[in-house]
Amino acid sequence: MKSQDETLEEWCRSLLQAYELEDVQMDVNAILSLAGVAAHSVVRPAAPLTTFIAGFAAGLASGSGQATDAVSMAAAMDVARALATDYDTEAAGTPGE
Image (cartoon, rainbow, N blue to C red; front, side):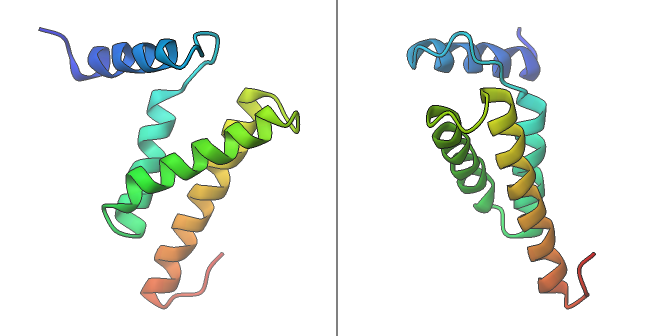
């Protein structure tokens, strides 16, 4: 029986292949971490929404030539993580950093 990590890596490769993106490198753990931040800082359903929008933003930036795939993904995830963290801070009524 495959581990969860093996299954996720295999699923990621399958999706990338289906979209003809075999050369794109994905950091599954970073994506899952971002989903976790969104789920815990905003609400649980924010996890897939956040990761989708971050991926869409990264794709637009990369596709328009603004940055490489890796830089686009890192930047989009950084923005989403910061917003989710700030949202949690605001919801708690404490000043942000």
